[in-house]
Amino acid sequence: MKKEDKKKVANKALKLLQGACKNGITCYKIARDTGITEQTVYNYANGDTTPTLANANILITYFTGKNNYNAHKVSNNGNNNNINIAGTQINRDQEEIQSLKNRINELEELLAELRSDKQFLQKLLEKN
View 1: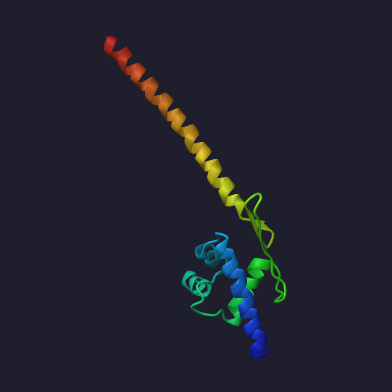
View 2: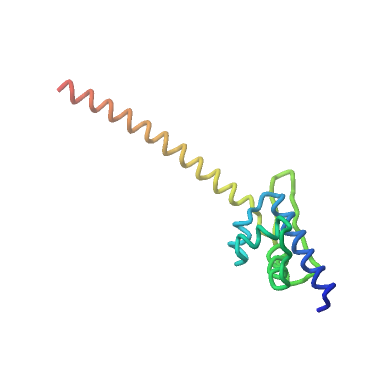
């Protein structure tokens, strides 16, 4: 591959990475998912370093779902806050967080009931 072509591949990977970071995807998540170190991903995202051809290929494949240097797709559907990366909707994390928050609220309500029952039982025992 020509040096100029390698540079184009690296630039596409950088654009995809920086676009994803602007849309709220963390360097940690990208690193975890791709196997590239978090510091390296961070350096790429900030423009401190340029991806190697191997890492550029990994990033392009990660963001597009294809091992095709010319294809890239990172879209943000503003209406429903979904960010599609290689067909994966990132909003699943948000849905899981909301589900956990709902469960926490349910547990807090149960705890309040238990505390109320405990106080009732203590008063009952004090009378006897």
